[in-house]
Length: 123
Image (cartoon, rainbow, N blue to C red):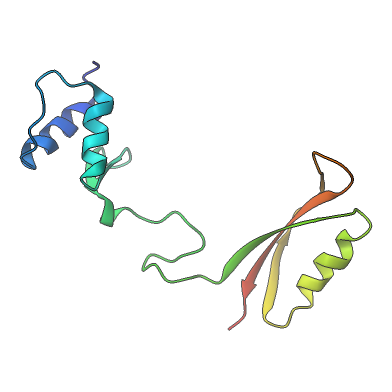
């Protein structure tokens, strides 16, 4: 068992929560117990924090959890059809295309390619 900062602060948190844990506990069991109680380790803040306070890193929701209207599409088709389908997204009246991958990537199996498109919902 390694006595890291994460472990030591986890042990303190378990004591504060009144959890009854064996004196000889391995790191993974301690971490799993705290996570089951709704806590997560914030390496940036160097402490265990309540899951409900965990910041979102998603571009699909703002800090309040509301949708941002952003979507990512993977257009998979025959190489000769790629431009048509990307253009179809660009012509959609309710969407604004903000990014199209600079290159297309070949499909792993069979003919075709993948192009990635990011859009934002208008309004």
